[in-house]
Image (cartoon, rainbow, N blue to C red):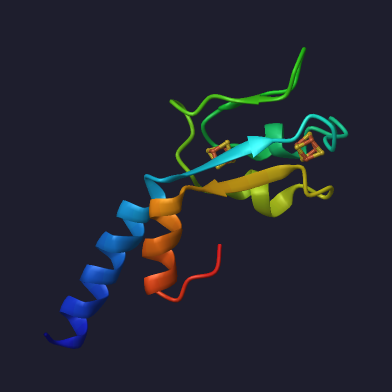
Length: 92
Ligand code: SF4
Ligand code: SF4
C-alpha cells in the first residue's frame, strides 16, 4: 500500500469513527454565553429553555466543543468509535 492509499484509508476510518461520536451540552456547566450558538455553522444548537443539540442537523465540526470557555460541550465517543480512534492513535 503506498502513502496516498494509507492516507485515504485513514480518512475513511476517521469518517467511520465520527459516526460513533456526538456532542452534548452539560446543562449544569453551561453559562448560556451563546458562543457555541453563534459559531455553529448548521444552527444545531438551542439554549432555551434547555441546552440542546439537534443531532440530525449537527455536521460534527466540533466548533462548539473547541470554543466553549466553560468546557460544557462534551464530546461523546461510543465504545466502537473509541476502538477505531485508538487504533489510529487519535486522542478525542
Ligand atoms: S459556549 Fe459553552 S457555556 Fe457558552 S452557551 Fe455554549 S455550551 Fe454554554
Ligand atoms: S459540532 Fe459543529 S455542527 Fe455540531 S453542534 Fe457543534 S458547532 Fe454545531
